[in-house]
Length: 256
Image 1 (spheres, rainbow, N blue to C red):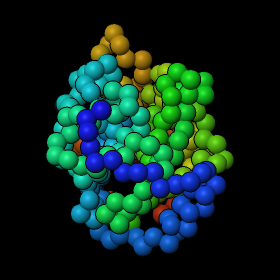
Image 2 (cartoon, rainbow, N blue to C red; image 1 turned 90 degrees about the vertical axis):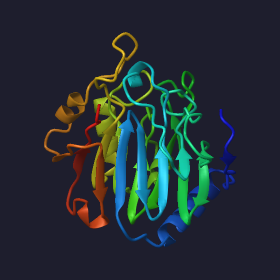
Image 3 (cartoon, rainbow, N blue to C red; image 1 turned 120 degrees about the vertical axis):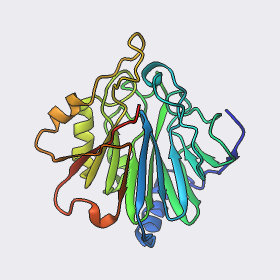
Image 4 (cartoon, rainbow, N blue to C red; image 1 turned 60 degrees about the horizontal axis):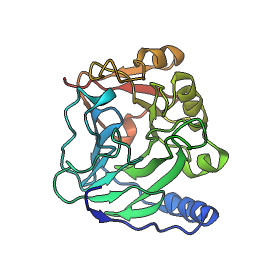
């Protein structure tokens, strides 16, 4: 892994982490302004708001990501869910951003970040190891990026994840992430205001080496939930723009 300024884990055990995290998140002052969410392909997104740029899961273009442009965008902080090449390829990220890649509680630019360990497969992590889901509040919006979650959310994980405003959830299945039914169960448990699907098959996929399915299967399973479609890869939101009752799905369009 390319050398970066690494942020150290600030927790001391699951129970201590849970207690301190809940207090800190509940007492955090909501940031004003708007949040820009830009989809860079697969599970990679750039979040810009409050003078902070957060890049999540930069990838190497191969397999299911073969046809995407490398996400070589400037950021202040990079979060990765694992060191697999489709969500942890940081070498090409320009500049010298801070990097966080382990579960724990961190602070950067007066924003608190919670990394929550989940399994990256359906066999207790024995195949693909640990996935880190990331939770933080930016521009007054409570964000939860589930990364490459593949196992059901436990009660302990749910406590740490809370009730997010926005959830980015993998939906395309394969060996290391939720399929549509598993994603539906996660959304039901978390009850967010806005759902952004990730990790699904697009024209970027290498036909011979990509095992995930298209977005339509998830949208069919979620029939009845309103779908917001953007004609671009970005959306800008304020907290007031989120659904006030129920949930909606936000679909972004990658600009090939």
